[in-house]
Image 1 (cartoon, rainbow, N blue to C red):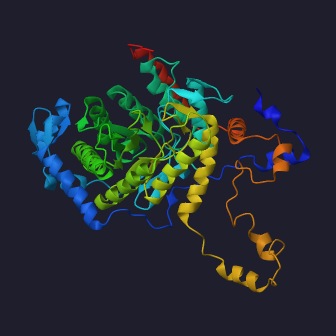
Image 2: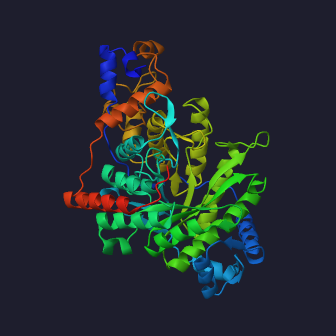
Image 3: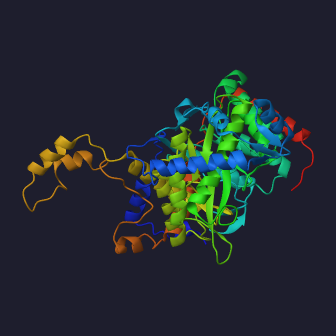
Length: 510
């Protein structure tokens, strides 16, 4: 079914379509203007810290990598087989060298962003093997879908990165995917991008691409990407993740050190117990990054779902996840380290009521908690098993609303507003007042995908539901996309590198 054909092309519909054509006004990183919502007392924060330190000192944490174990021994840590026992004073000394903020440079300097302190950024979803396509069908993701989402990530004014593995291109051989994905992100967007973490070779290729784009000297001293390093919860940092962390940290590139948490399955069935475990695991990973390179940027956080005690299925958008994400923000501020969590998560299988409510609840926890790097903020559906075009379109508009919410109300111009009050008679209105005419376009947020007109107007415009409107908007955005400028010499160098490396890579496993 051609959804766009359902829209009646009346004069009002045409005017509405013109009104909602996408004008890209790129938002800088959010500099929050509202207070943090801290859930824990200072005493509770200290209790979390002390319990985590006790666990790392007495239980230890496994590092399944010989080089990492040698690095810990050389640094003076106690190592027994694969278990590293971390003295709290040593750990605190290591994490003290992590920068409180870092600048992530884009190939277009206007798109560079700062991560940490009171800054917050929004980034797309990650890793889905399926997409809910432009016809609303659930299909395996392909390289074409990946390119489309890279374009959408670029044109989205509220997203601060083009993404990472925005979807898994299943039509490309496994070992060829990293180079195809990174070159797609670089070509289709001039925003910062995420590195690939599936292997040492993929991380090295990411860095080679970054050097082509930015120059080797610049990359060695400046952060141009942030990549995802997951802990194998409970209490294991495995060799793949550690090898990738070495590549990025030694190159001064930021990583998200994030336990992958299923509350009640791989953490205790208790929120404070979960936070204690997250804290121990994340800090151990961050401390390791400083063994690789002192001062390498690192981000503290996790991916969190609660587990249904009825079915064992992961659940998104529950109040428990809000609490955990807000506590992650508070703990990260305690250590003066940037924070990360996932924002627009949901377990719904469709772009429906559940998807909207769960995503909104998750986002409020992340925003109110002051999380610096809000991951999976657009397109996420079906517990990351699918990436939805329609939801992506809705999410990026909702992120503009969250941006406005977290900036706080604008106090400027209050005197003119008071004058308008004094100038309006009792029982009158402000619709035609000079103050309203001067400010109506900027005074309030005006979402366009959420239909606020009368039911008669809604029917005349095709009686489109939210999912249909999102699909139309996603198509429209792709039609309006304009490829950002890339120096032809750099583009040619990228093509040569891609051709050469793909010919060298063996073991093509689909």
